[in-house]
Amino acid sequence: MDQNNPDKGVLYEIATILKEGGIVALPTETVYGLAVCVDIPEAVERLRRIKNRPGDKPFPIQIWPSKKVFSLTPKDKIAPNAYRLIQRFWPGPLTVIFPAMDKERFGEKVGIRVSAHRVVQELLGLGDLVVYMPSANPSGSPPAQSLQEVISYFPKGLDAVVASGGVEGKASTVVDITTSPWKIAREGAVPAQEIRRVEQSRRIVFVCTGNSCRSVMAEYYLKKLLSQREGTEEVEVYSCGIMVVDGIGGATPVVVEMLAREGMDASRHVRRAINESLLLGADLIFVMERYHEDVILRYLPFLRGRIYLLGEFIEDLSTDPEIPDPIGGSWEVYEETYSKIKKAVNRILDLITGGKK
Image (cartoon, rainbow, N blue to C red; front, side, top):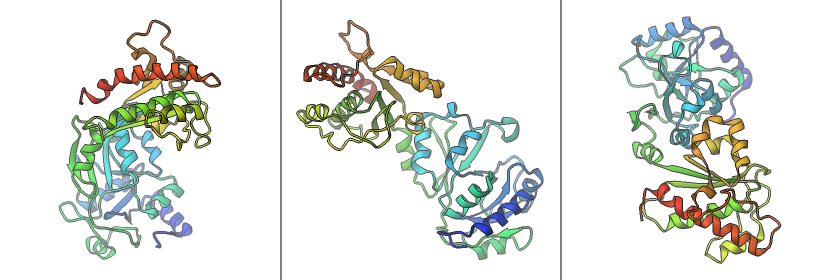
């Protein structure tokens, strides 16, 4: 099967085999795997027998698209850095062990992977399938890296074998994010150093209404401060707005000029709408007004403990901690707004960097 343009008719045939309880050998970008539908116990038992897999050792699950992960693990149980991990490496050669949503079915934990191989993606997507997919080998033997090795290992017992390119031969890295620090159960195609870098990273998100004034000021000013401190390379800073058409428009001319006077170039800033992916991966979310928080919590209520009014961090604040929108105001109004934002951002800098200079 052409890995870049898999035949949809054949994929439907394979999906039917899986839905009828079959075992199918499939290529991934790492090694070959053996797939069975997770909701067919007889197929799972057959798979366990031909692999000679111990009953207490669970099989990893393959999904497509990535958002299906939330049908298997609670969204509110994924820490921000764990969410950034799957954003960074999915689809790809990374298996992540999460807390299981259905403990009766899967136990306390569930290992999930999203392959970058298009054949797997198209098959799971077209068939709306969730499959167990361990490597294609008897337990204790090296994973199959070719069609010939699959057939050599399993001359009988498979219902279909898919031949395709793109198999690189190095197994996926397996990371258990239910422990602190994360446990790298197996180092494979993704280096452990890259995993640890994401684990130790942080993400800060500033939210306003239009992502053209206040949140832009905060984003660019914090980035400037972080650039002047050592050991802050893994701190991500973003801004977004709750009433924005994503990718349309930029910062207001006043903000661009104001930041330029302090050596910051916001001339290429593109407005960003709030989105679930950005917020789930945020350690701290700073809003300008209370209703910004209300909008976020309406959809993601479990983020309450990560959201703060930026104005609460102004040390000499004697008024309401909300920072009003300066849009349409004079230069002086913008200056007053920017002054408040700078005071607050300076105050939270040590919180973000742990006091590093």
